[in-house]
Amino acid sequence: MNNYIWLVRREFWENRAIWVIPLVIGGFMVLCALFGRVDLMAVSSHALGRTVGQAFLGTVGATFFVVMSIYAAWYLLDCLYADRKDRSVLFWKSLPISDATTVLSKLATAVIVIPLVYFVAADLTTLLVAFIISVRAGSLVAGTLWQAGLWLQIQLLWLYMILTTAVWYLPVTAYLLLISSWAKRAVTLWSVLPPLALILGERWFFGTHVIAHQLSLRLFGFTEAAFSANLASWASATAADSDSIRTPADILSFLDFTGFFSSMATWAGVAVGIALIIGSIQLRMRRTEI
Image 1 (cartoon, rainbow, N blue to C red):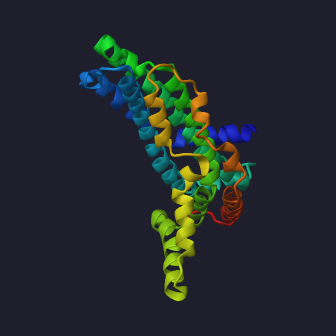
Image 2: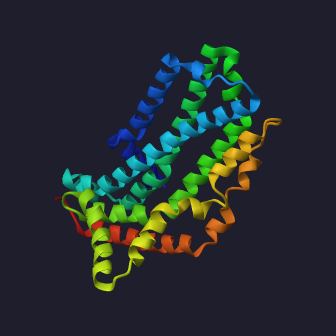
Image 3: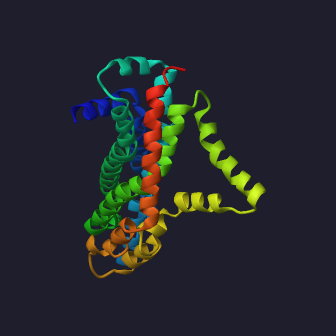
């Protein structure tokens, strides 16, 4: 366990973008709150206030989540490749740390640590921005932003998505690790070429599109697998309730936890992901510097 902790610390030392990028995003949002037009958030009714408050919380969370997804993909493609490119892999192989431990620590950094860093950054940014806008605008928008029920629901949604995206996209993250451990150059290009070649080859020789369909389901089918209904319906239901403060239990009816973890598609993806992780470890053991 100590090895994993130190390896994760190493990722923080060598990849400062893990915390610098969310810090920059949060700083930009704080500047917008300090000098932006807060009167645009003024509302005329409680129902409209809930809608504006939810849009505010959702926008901040979605911004951090999208940037996190892009950075995590880049990190996975670069983490094992960079070790070989700068020849630091020779140093790490000289230590009593197995290649499996190294690969798994990088995987854990991408699917657990980075999302948690962005989760904390999004929370702190939301609270700070809401405080600044409330001070600047006073009662004009204060009641719109300080809604404990909505805020707690967003926290629950964040944690649920961290867990389920880590599981659902395991074959994708493991594939990016495999490319990072194998490619000698142009890792981004090599991450695209194999699936593209398989899709085109299947289409030309068999006239089918099974591979393209399965890739599409894996890349874009997360919300259908993880939620029992479209999140837009949760937003509409929350905004429409103007007479009471809704509790975090409201969103539970939209999170399909049981259905997600009992789905064959979920566990088939986990099996493929495990196989690709084993392949990444084997390549790590056999490949040295570039």
